[in-house]
Length: 140
Image (cartoon, rainbow, N blue to C red; front, side):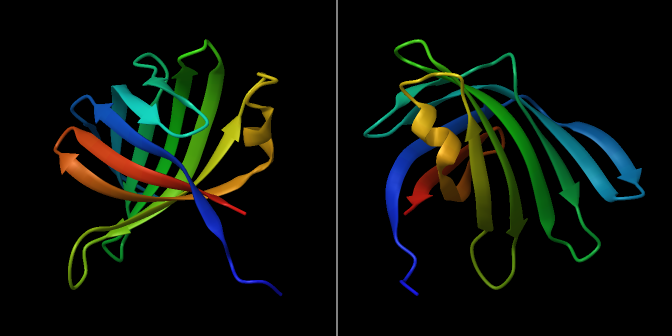
């Protein structure tokens, strides 16, 4: 078995509206973060994050960690639409924020059809109260 290899796919900045406090549900404490826009830049794709189709349904779990459930619409500079979904985990224990995601992509674009077939991981950080930055890597 070979070692896990990756290559940089893109840098992603997501801008957020103020969150909506849904409250404590049977699943845990739920907050909804509507996406207000953003930008992504990579060697093979670049563009903006749609301000009209995205949110993070963040769940604070009983162990204090957070679980992300995110949907974004990426709009490439050459006009393609790419749905990006990801699940992730975040927590603050003994150091900086641990924020890791597992993005998947869906597109009808022939030019970006390769995204439909890859696995990827993201490493993130909060930049401000209303923005998040990720480095996304394609798993080879």
